Image (cartoon, rainbow, N blue to C red; front, side, top):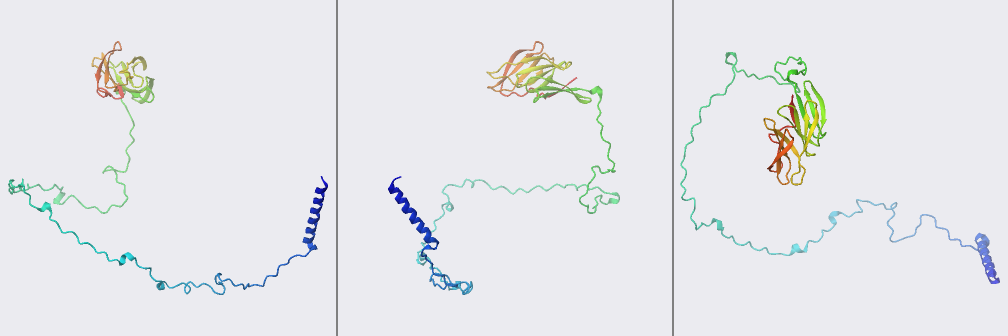
Length: 310
């Protein structure tokens, strides 16, 4: 560090020490004059009046609303604008007589045809009690609410519960196509019980029992097949695939048989455009031919999805 820099540092330290010494009583300090005692009576022209000496009076300090002058009127209202006279009435052209002849003048007036007299209706039937008095009697007011028995001679004793019973000689077996489960349900009727479920094709929609009662054909709409069930073993013994129609899979939705059981007719629920009916030989289970039809053919003879066998 040079001599000049050292001298400047020394001068700075001396000045700083002198300032600190004067601030701690070593020098003369400035003392402001004392404030006057309150209240400070310093007038300011823009100050509001003192609330303690001149409180606000909302009744006397506010102007009377009736003394406030009304606003000036609209100058346009003082201008006298003349109102034009309405136009004269013109003759209504519709009320003028037509130059063409009236088409109803040549129609003669209808003659006064008297109405036929009313027939003598017999008096309303009213049941009579013994002695000729009326059988209808006014009853007293009914208390509300009130439960009325269903039968007019109800004695207050409930009937015994019905016990389900069946005749074994009339027992049958129902076949139900369960579309969502892809199964066919064998349901007994005496007693009511599920006998067996058999898996078939996709989305079965119709079941038809052959006329000989030995098998049942199931129309599987989503798999384009016919499942043949044996009613004796309750199993699928054969499956008949159906060909496409105009490049689209077949959707069988109904099966019917001829009375002799030799031929089956399977409807195709499709429209690409139009549809067909498959004619199938029952013995060989082969397709003999197809019959063109309109689109979306309903099941022939409307076979339900539940069939009775046995």
